[in-house]
Image (cartoon, rainbow, N blue to C red; front, side, top):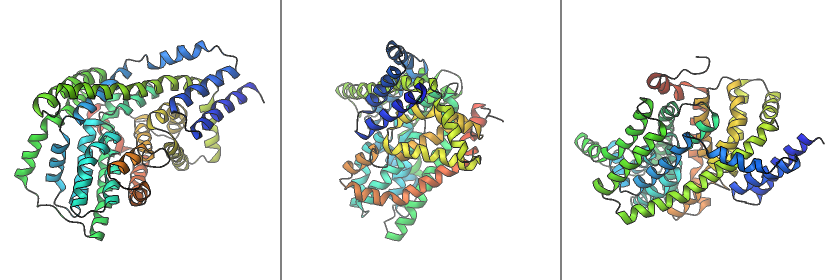
Length: 437
């Protein structure tokens, strides 16, 4: 066995073993990289150099700001207002509270950018409300966790910033714009699934649609929704970078949460910032160690080997696209979102581009695949959070989620094979020119 083959075996084999043994993902990535370098007689000083290089990126400065913005707005008393706005929009339908849950997740996703925050915040309010209205607890939890994935696609999302940085040369503004329509397609798909189940089980309707009530709730929610405009319009319009817009949005979120909605006092602000530091430390150590891992992959030509292996199975672009989705879905079952983006993007993006998938479109595909992974055992963080919030056994939640998995897979296939779902808004509003376009 030559040195290159041995190094690849050690890198991927040790990583797989440590994942199986439930090592923290950052340690698994870092230690497997160290073992790989030792096999090649490389200096371990490279580990420190590459880790520092991995997080020395101006674009990545947006990540802590977006996380802070999400925590401040998520704990600042806006959940009830967004639920009321969603209720005025779709509460009149059969299974109205389920539809409210889905639409509220779309709104809330633009604030938090986190499926976990969505599930914890909206779920703690809506699941008990739905159960009291006669909805089954497992159905209520399933709706909550699946709709929370909309928040990963609706900007601003720090995972999109991580993807843009990892992919290299990707416009964060275009990526933000690309998320709106796919998130809308996902929402509509979940709403159709919820409606069918609600009709079958005769779940209740809400009050009739009232235009006055709708505008009243829209005005109440304006301050929360304006945070999204600051980020997206500012970045797309070229008024400031993603990092600058994120910093402005943090200040805005602080003022809205403390002085307008008054959902936070200064003690709560410090508690929220403490939560931000905890989350950020996890994200940054993942980015740092993944930088070393990615360098090892590139040095050993693993992306080229993976591309040759996949294309050797078939040269049909449809088959290759399905294989890419399958790989990402399997990874989502065993790994968290950030490490998948950091590790898989350098390997799979060149393959996706070779079959005509635009980098922006592929970013949306990656994010949605990772979102589905958050709902699947054994890692499924959002699945565990939903089960805890809904006080429902995980086995029942998984069973109730099965119809919604179908809705999500249909959405994934639509996004994969209809590029314009992802690229229409970046082209119209961001001036983005797709590859080959």
